[in-house]
Amino acid sequence: MKLLETTIKNKVLESMISILDKDRDKILEANKKDCELFNKEDRAMYDRLVVDNKKIDGMIASVKEVLGQEDPVGKVKSERNLENGLNVTNKTAPFGTIMIIYESRPDVTIEAAVLAFKANNKILLKGGKEALHSNKALEKCWHQALEENDLDTNWIQLLHMNRTETQEFLRNPSEKLDLIVPRGGERLIAFVKEHAKCAVLVSGRGNNFLYVDKDADWEKSIKVILNAKTHKISACNALDKILVDAAVPNYEQKLKELDSILKEQGVSVLVDEKTGSILKEEEVIKDEAIWHEEFLAMKCCIGTVENLDEAIEKINKFSGGHSSTVMTKDSSKAMKFMEQVDSAAVYHNASTRFTDGGAMGVGAELAISTDKLHHRGPLGLEQLVTNKYFVFGDGQIRV
Image (cartoon, rainbow, N blue to C red; front, side, top):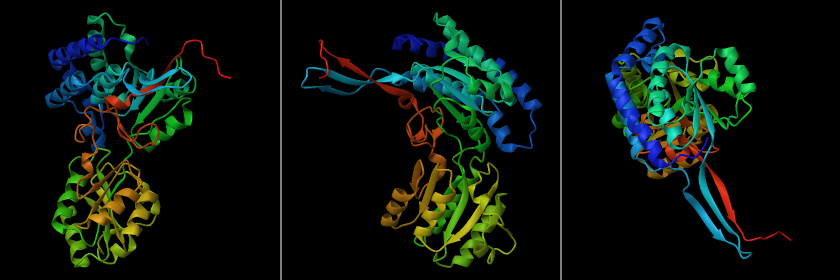
């Protein structure tokens, strides 16, 4: 795709803001069709699917936010004048064509596209069938905004393919793909990695841990645990696993208190053997594979560890590499935890729910990457570019 002037890109976004506001009723009606067809037993997926006026306000806010951000393309990263007279300049450049595959979440159709477009990338949107009507309505808004500014609608395309067709497209794409971002659960990620022929940036899997150190403030720990677990169970930054240090003062009493508070909030609890010797009513974990699992439900595991090192080892073995929290008043322990736990975001005395582009000051995000190349954490506008070397000479040859 050709490089667009910043003013043109911003005009498209201005048009999109107006169109989203004007077409609220059409978007809500389309989403109503999707919601009526959906099996509401999957609460997490249903929560992601629903669009209301507040959600549309959020879409508009995302576009406005990106509109106000500096164009990330063509920024000089480094510049060197070599002894041979060459000038070597490294600048940011678009990826080219990005494909994002996601489940439910019609708002991704707005957030992913606005970021990709402002960074001068073409984007292919492969949403789930459960959000088909919503995504088609939002794609129509994008196409109208592009056409109003004399741009081809193929900058932003919604792909209408079933699983088999998607598999074949990943193996033999009809056009060059530069990056694929699967945003969803483990099965989706594994499917994409198995079949894709280009770079895949993994995102979306949570399975986040929180460790309560023996020196933690217990009241703060309860507050943070409840927020991380119950605030939004459908989010990839929700809490699934809680590790409690056996040396916590009044350990047995506090375990029972934690269990009782979680159950009062409707959270079902699974426990390891040591914890189960105290919380005798809870189901004891038989298969350690459950420590790898992301729940996206009102469910969590509580385990007991002997010290900080054991907590770090367990988190690095089982977590999804997304977000991890340590609750402690000991700053040296906190720093050891944060340096040694292998997660995209590590927290000291705070909820994992903050791993989000907006909450972390990044702005609108394409996804939360748990990969280490090319970026880890929220994928905002600045992360949707690669780099390119511009080498200026005057007939130099290498000898």
